[in-house]
Amino acid sequence: MAIRQAPHGPIWRKRTTPQSIALWFGWLLLVLLFVLAWEAMTRNQIWAFVWDAPEQAADLFGRMVPPRWSYMDQLWVPLWDTINIATLGTLLAIVLAVPVAFLAARNTTPSPLLVRPIAIFIIVASRSVNALIWALLLVAILGPGLLAGIIAIALRSIGFIGKLLYEAIEEIDLRQVEAVRATGAGPAQVLDYGIVPQIMPAFAGITLFRWDINIRESTVLGLVGAGGIGLQLKASVDGLAWPQVTLIFIVILTTVILSEWVSARVRAALI
Amino acid sequence: MSEGATRYPRHWRRPPLISDGRLRWAIYAGVLVYLVVGIGAVEVNWGRLSEGWERGLRFLGGFVEPDFISRWDDIRAGLIESLAMTLTATVVGVLISIPVGIGAARNIAPSPVYLACRALIALSRSLQEIIVAILFVAMVGFGPLAGFLTLAFATIGFLAKLLAEDIEDIDAAQVEAIRATGAGWWQVLDYGIRSQVTPRLIGLSLYRLDINFRESAVIGIVGAGGVGATLNTALDRYEYDSAAAILILIIVIVLVTEYVSGWVRGRVQ
Image (tube, rainbow over all chains, first blue to last red; front, side):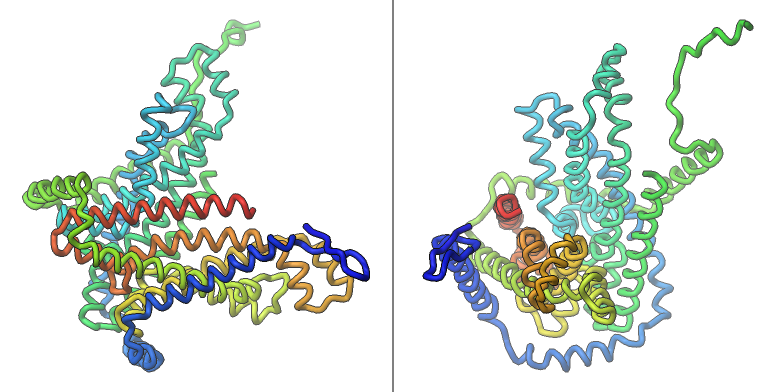
């Protein structure tokens, strides 16, 4: 806040002069960066492709409708695979993420100097790589199929579930833990009766939320060969079979909306 | 007094989550059946797995000795493309999100505008980035421009929704006070609403910048440019040491942007 003295009296201003100059330079820097980035991005762009984009879009739309409904017969099995990838991947992630979360939480970790950084590193590494990239790697290592998809979903979910769960563990009420300990409970019993009941609602919410996201992500994992309905999507896009692509989009959208509804219902029932 | 009334229970058992016993066992049985059927559906090719094991070890070896040098030109070009895509898409996405977000706030927008903006947000949110990328690549051709359009489109759904919710949550008294001075619609927007939502808008934009970089590493797989395309090529050539180098760079950049945007958000909010 600054007050400037003018001939007719003081004028209130939000920023001092150096502050407003710094702000102005900040915006200038952003504009400069934007121009540079735009130049770098469009250096190799063939603009002829862009100018006829409206025509291309109209053409694409014309090819995409009506959807080829009869193709649905071939989609039921991939759809079931997709749901399996998401569900089994989430279960595998729970099995792996729960111990990691307990090792990462400040109040339950056995050693804050040695074990906690390792657990945090696992969480960070898992979170920074998208499920699709994990799938890309796993398909190269394990070969295409459901297994690569399940493990990819699990690897990505460890970070998500682990991070939210260890934050929940750090926020528990210590008095309840103390009370259970005061009855003479051992460490395992303290965990079972003092800590677990407190994080159960958060745990249910987190896993359901992640399952919902995983359904969404597993629909496209097939693009890199990791099974599910994405395989059919890739085959249809590569074969320029746009009516089939439309049908697959409709199926994916319906599945995503249904899974969102299911997880909202289950969450409401549990919490 | 009878004998039974003085005998207190010596043991306590936790009440089960689902009190109806039959329903509980039905759910357990259902889960078990699903697990058997679901895991049974996973066809594991053990021969392929043992083959892959050796490749997996080579890949892990790549992480120990990542090769930044032999494909450095491709990696650099991919990273620059990704960063450029991220920045431009975030800036343009935010610029478009602001009017859409204002339009999608129930307390200031008239009903037809509200419905139109909410429909746009719902469309953008329900389509995954990679699917949008497929469509844009089909329209404008391969390259980072398709990625830019994808990320900008995805930014609208995210940012406009959160901005609209923030505008709906503002303190109405301040708006009323500005209106009482005789301010017009634009002045109310500028002095009554903008000042209340700006810190959060800046925070959300930085958060989205972060997300956009992560996504930019992915949409290259379907041809929308960026470092994802470089990664895909490296894996197709079985150059695991280059792929490991790219992954390490992605992780480092994600960590740096996350840290920086967290720091700036902490200062602004």
